Image (cartoon, rainbow, N blue to C red; front, side, top):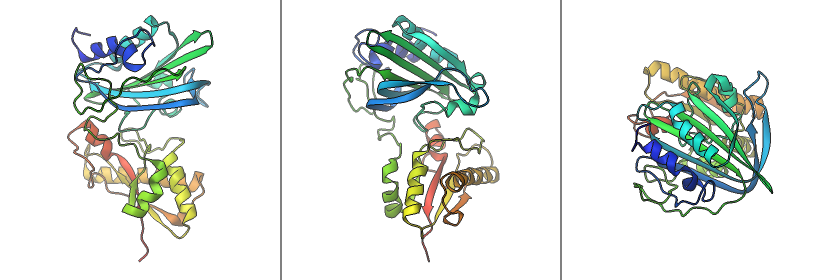
Length: 328
């Protein structure tokens, strides 16, 4: 990794950028070309951390408890591999006294089944290419417990995606300052690169959006490129939609699949419909919603939310929406 590259700069700033005191006290700063797109904290909770690859039945894991922080950043890939992205971060963890407990890559992890067993934030903040991702779990023992850190690293054609999740002692939060164009000396921000709030859906407000707008994007419905199989979940947005349909037994929704512009229109319409049908199957087969209340259609790339000229735009456009079928 050449001197002056943004990924190297980020790796060198890793300890203080994330949590003061993780491996030294540094003022949290963000390199010019990296953008923090998600920053979530939980004061006290728990999650399961993979301890081995998918074995054909399960992904072995251990329960970790404590304060949880999930942070996702993106940066221009500049020809780097996922290995080149994760290695400096791994080195910083080791230098900070962490022991690498488990690491794997893509098919060696177990592909689809492994990815959906991890605590990974959904697109568009965190993109995971099922054919090219790397996972690492590290831990550091202290007198009163253990701190855990996991890394999920993947890429698109143009950008590196990194999610860092820490479970352990509560640490002082870094100063937060909203900035549309963070420079090398800018404090750590929690704003999306386009100056808008991170576009994760608020599942609790799904019923309100359906009533107000007549439609709502279903957050956390993550399909790999060209794939139509829905993961095992959990899917809070589908739980919320199921609750809405149970509370309104006379209501009907049409699940509408959308794609980006990669590939031809006919193929994308078929692909988007199959994805919508997969979501319908989950609602009907797993959540017990009457089949008559849910239909599935696909429109391919004919109704984009954003420009398909960028990674971020294409990610936003790959989605499934619930549309109220208003009685006539």
